[in-house]
Length: 217
View 1: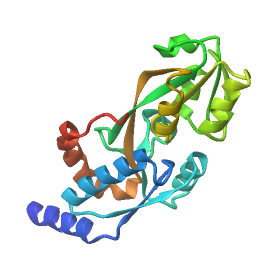
View 2: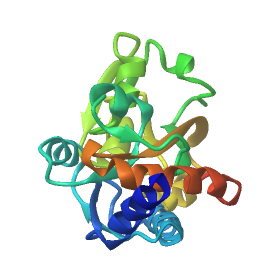
View 3: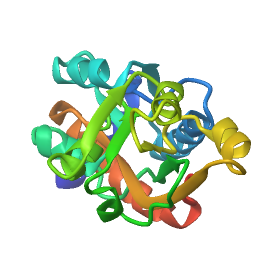
């Protein structure tokens, strides 16, 4: 009896419509390509499917909260603290890094940013939680605006993560700027509670895939 119930549950999950996911990772960026590759592998092994829609970070969070999407595949642990009703897969889907761009100094840890003026692309809630009260924070609309703040001496450091497309900046600025990769940033797949069956099916598969997933540079 129990086995038949489990099989029935799994067949229901497999027959379900694609899970509509939302992400603030910019379409066409290297990070988004890696994200899609890993989702394709994860969902394919689980016999499930998904769709991925781009929204800016704050809008993505709002629309997920309003139930317009089934989940978000690229959110930090801090996101889960703000939305405890969501289900988080235990293993990270990706580990990226924070980068600091400066014209004067290298950054080795969050503590090195204390007392400084820091610009950053808007929507980085984890950065805000870590540095609130420790640094002067300037949220801006893009990485280009973030760097422009440093060039104009309106901030001392531009901090972003590799979730933001920055390969061009890394290659073009590495000779004239001090660029530091200073902290890891793990992102996780969150699902709405009504998709618990899918979460239970995906969770062990994602854990088994971890040796195949290299950090995102």
